[in-house]
Length: 253
Image 1 (cartoon, rainbow, N blue to C red):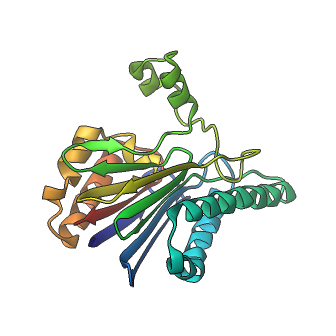
Image 2: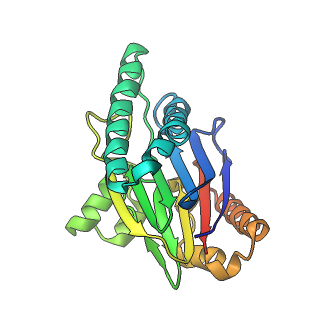
């Protein structure tokens, strides 16, 4: 598999600090190209969200550089998934203890994907998302939010969810939850496009608009990918999104 990647993050039109953090790692191995991409959205309503998101990003970067080479000796994504879950649980405790020490509260969403050979692994906590675009667009991750839970239970309609003031209420995030239970997703890589994004990227645009700009036919090369992603971020800002805005595009061919 061949991977072409672009990433962009923007402070947006209202906030003074960008609490989002993103990571892209691209390497060659005996198994072919490998991609690690991570999007973390530090909690906008909590103090020092940028510290929480950056802490998680640094941990994933260190894992890619120091531990992934050892995993490649006998690659097993299920083993990596369990190690990632443990890593996020430990980070949840460590960030939470730091917050208690500083008498503040901080937290972050975490959405990460590892593509190796013909397989991918996703780990996810919070309401950042992973989409996959081929002949259509599919949301691969589940939002860990009050709204998503109520929609699933049938106690709220999609129309009500659009305007509900609890839209950003998370059920879990790393650093501000008593405990976290990361969602784990495995899959086979195929031709198409992965989109990882913070909630600020997607609130003001719908899936039809996302697909129109980011389907594989519109992403002929890295330059075009960068332009399409930048155009969408500018559109989100024009529509008065208040949050930070971050996204990573991975084209698989």
